[in-house]
Amino acid sequence: MRKTPLVLSVPEGGLRSSERKVVTVAVLSICLLFAVAMPAQQQAIAGIADSKGPILTTFEAPGAGTGAGQGTHAESINAAAVISGSYADSNNTSHGFVRAKDGTITTYDAPGAGTGAGVGTYGGGINAAGAIAGSYLRRR
Image 1 (tube, rainbow, N blue to C red):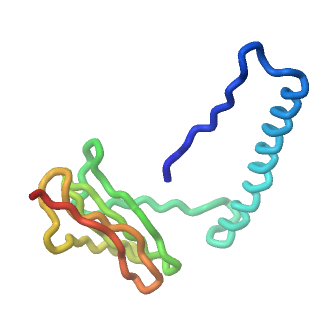
Image 2: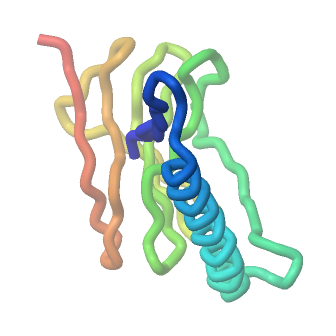
Image 3: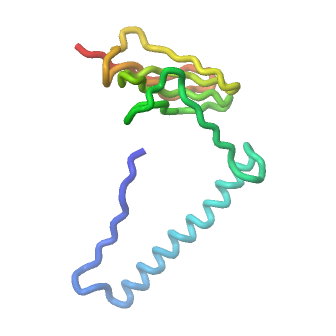
């Protein structure tokens, strides 16, 4: 998701009193919206975790590099808690992976995918049936 900054520009000479009130109301409304949304999100999370908060699980795909821009990148999770994504190895080649709910990780490369730096297989979304959508790159 691309983050877009929110910019509030103020005309030269400042805001009039009535304009300040509108801006104040707008800012307070946004704060109220976030304040109401947060407990709702926490309640939704409570359905999959205990009352102490969400459970965070970290993992690395076998063969994932540890340098800059390398490592494991989870892209999607389905209702069965199966995760798909990609990892970049120490040569900066990308490979796809699937992580089962029990933690078993299976890696794969798309047929025809490149094997050099900046190319390879990119695992993407995973549906309920376990089918993965992704892409691959190769050099010409």
